[in-house]
Image 1 (tube, helix red, strand yellow):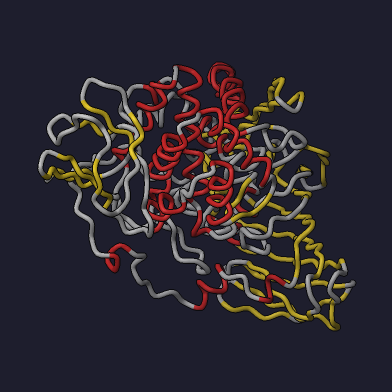
Image 2 (tube, rainbow, N blue to C red):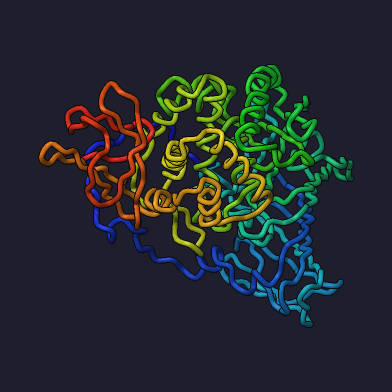
Length: 553
């Protein structure tokens, strides 16, 4: 989650002209070799499958510096003697150790290339350790930029956190920095000054008092985790706990907050967390990380979906820092950061896009979970009103899907436009029970996996029995909306779609004013509107649930 603003100008829906296909496709950009090294799956990355990390870091708060190591344990997918890992160039690779010996490496941009003394055979399990140090990038506007946040709480005690979605985890630790390969499990050890606590992903396994007034915290993650989700949180934390009787049994709820926020946290978390879990488990299936538990952690930034350790910085207010992004009133009845960032446990953390270009899979479904939560609390009409209100934030500036292989996202419309597309698909399927099973089935079918847009859309097509690819193509791959064009000839109302996506043959809900809505099939060729008595003056089109343009001749 890196939503930039809760309040954007509304866009007109009716009579939107369609631009040419050339204008609608992703604008050409000049990408560098560094972009390709960061975003592509070259043979130097695909040759090894990460199985386990042990990240061991010492934090020097006064110097704003890090030092430590990361052990890479992997399975070779092919024979190789050279691979790539990633670490930002402002951090030093002190040495790479393989079988007790330092091995040579070279650097280019933020990529590091290691050469091994002999061929590592396909199917074998092996490991190496990277030792590193330096001053990491300091985030100035986290979570919208990446790096470490160094600040102090109201009592003057240090408060440090990481946030690196988009820019990548290699901004602060050495890793294979590509979303397509999630490590299967991980041990994270962080050493901090005595008197402070470090909160990380997974479960706390050990606290060790070290010489020199230092404390090391060891946290174990048992589930696959993406690099950008690994999060360090250091501060004067107080812990309180609860549990939730969920679909897979007892889910532990752990809350780590600044001591000064304890009373507010008990109230705000108590009001939001269990209703959120009940709602999202109902719609998306069981919470995906029972083994690692669920945590909320006070953060010195707005928030982020760090797996099993969700960062919280919404100032214990309902809405988005006290605002309703939908301008409907429904968004002020719950805490946006708790609902949205926790929703990412299902889409983003459980189901992860292989390429950052497909980030709509994270943000579209999670933004949609806000509406589903509203529906679960206040009824379907409330959820639909919230969804409709989200449209005010849509800019239709560029395609939602970005260019592949260069670590580049598409439009920020992946949030609100993405959720409205999903609501349209629900409306087209016209069977809420089936739609719920599709959503839950996604979580089960792609459990702990990295995926592509084609896989997600293909599954929805298969389970719905409909070809919804043109709908997703239009809204994800083009920036403009499809337009429903109506005209009347010799007393007969005719309609067609004007769209960029191939075979945009989509049924739409229409009615003669005062009657019931019906799903009317339409193609890109004019055809009669099969509603007795329909004219261009008395036709009602369901633009509440369909995010489209309408042109009446």
